Length: 329
Image (cartoon, rainbow, N blue to C red; front, side, top):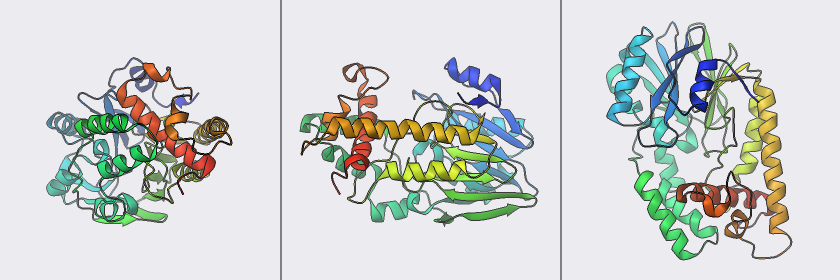
């Protein structure tokens, strides 16, 4: 099990409560931001003190309550939003990009994201999120009525503007210097195709949604013939393992130690998933993700999962099947 950096943060997570803002390392603040109405309850953004202004990792959700909580926390740790010089986004999901544009308006901060997660690029190459989801659900082999109901559910909770203008995109390892603080943007696809982790060379890695201390990673949507997010994730976990980080700072749950061991643990978990899916698919032609997902072991039996969890699980099983068998390429 991952070793928490801040015991109170781990205790709050396990008690299904939002923790208080806390200093993870000298000048690095974990700032939980509430996610009203979400089962996740909160997302954690990280504020880093530097001689060239504050640096922010991720930007919460675009909601007045999130913004109020965030600005209060920034003030409480001795900063002002107006002093933020750079916003690094791990990926383009709505609970991560939310108020990046608002911060830029107030402070002039540049906004940085992985190239494939730049909305303009994503729309040109893949289409919007809901377009990708509709395509992916159809590819799973689920009955049309299931596809329709899952898509309708997603439309109710997954719609956001997808119009954030990005100042700088990264496609390869890129180094940013802020006085004596150096942060490397490291491509880390798997959860999304442009997911990026940020390595503070003092020993911290900000992992976004790629590597939580507990539970598996959620694989990206498969909507194109060459998509293989499981292969992406395995490469990403090896890359994170080899960074030499001593503390991982994920966007959910809590910061933790033993980063390399956790990367190896997750790799083993997902390789076991691939093996299970390969066995379930067997040699029979025409096995679909819908067939596989309903036979996999989830936290609860398939029929007892909520509809949203079934949708996530089906998309995840589809990605595993793509990697295990190459079906759909």
